[in-house]
Length: 324
Image (spheres, rainbow, N blue to C red):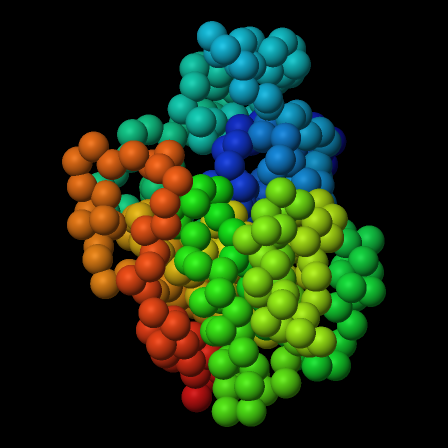
């Protein structure tokens, strides 16, 4: 095959709206890029997650998919991609889009498989075992902005005390206490700075952690887009946060990552990677949710997870990640 034909190959990668699922899909995209050197990439993704893909090698276009009633967003997407001949179309939203496009290969996600992690499900599309791990692509500009926010020197403990719904948010005061323990004189990161990450509308949840951090706190609430956040996370020595998109982003960035779980399934959504781990409430996901559980309930279901349990899990993961 000539170099001209290789450079003309195109990949359409339709991925998730939610940040966490979008992050988990990056490993599959990375594998496809390695499989097809020089391929041009178009990523269709939810607007909030779009910055994650801004530095993808060979990126030709990002199409922000804004969900609309009666599936009109798929018709809009189709109007933007229908005239292109695609080498590969990947649809991780399970729509019919891939089947109406000209494509040499179609990879479309199917129904969930019980007991399988989302990363494993994505690897199943190409029979990959082990599945490709999530990754991040950083621009030099994002690295420079992160270096200005978090200069080298004192180690950084990253904390993300918010989540996309109240039920799986560990009480913020406990995040503050855990941060003090882990960075105290007897902690695993004595004297470390405590960087607190959250979106602008989550400041109330993050405020107690910043207050507990005192002079060592670094306010990274609304520090930039997700690419900037990823670059900042990569500079941390350790991350601790609720089950969230930031948790998955930290793990993808290669940071030792501890996820806190309660009313969400750790078997499917635990942070992925050799430096990742999780701790959950004494109750299982099934015990907490049961039949007829209201995922929109404005109540915390993480109260039974103690600071002692989280601290112990952090220390164990730190020892493992450090090779101790």
